[in-house]
Image (cartoon, rainbow over all chains, first blue to last red; front, side, top):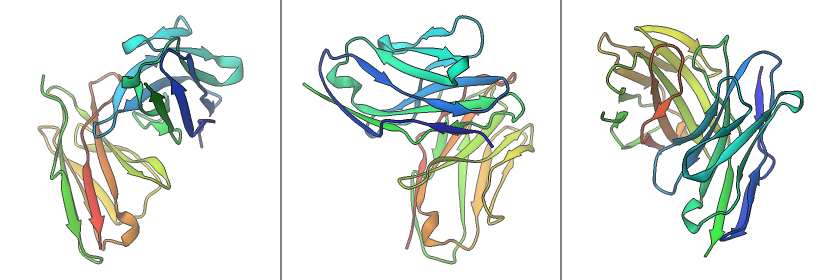
Length: 114
Length: 112
């Protein structure tokens, strides 16, 4: 069975600091990779996705992620965070043999101090 | 386009009762997936329906079931509720071709 690990459960940053959230997955086949964000009181929203091609993908609100196949990783980055980025971030993996089933990591709570 | 809608948004039930949750996908989306979100277990996949057929099922007991109607609306049912079923139940829809999923606001179920 596939699994997803997010190494940081809680992250606290000051505004303008750089962000990198780790995500590793275990599955040997072809995968699609996603980062979702859940702002306080809101529903899950897609930040970015990787299906194929350029392993560096750009998403909304200045976020980007890099797929490194050899490391089974899909880390999320943002050069300069804002207070409004305070949220919970989830990495998710979908393998092409299991329909639309997403396997989620445990989530990372990010707090950005103004 | 309107987003994924879920009803009701909040629900309080007693142990042993059953509950039915409803999800209306984005117009044109034929795949509907359900997830359970709890503080302890995080987000876990329940099942996926596509064209009225269950396509995938997660590792949940048979008390959890679902169905999809011809208009792609979906319902999930939990019978014989247990305290541990208290959770946020999320529905997600996607279009044909296995594109990304769009999530609804969820139904917060509390079992007392």
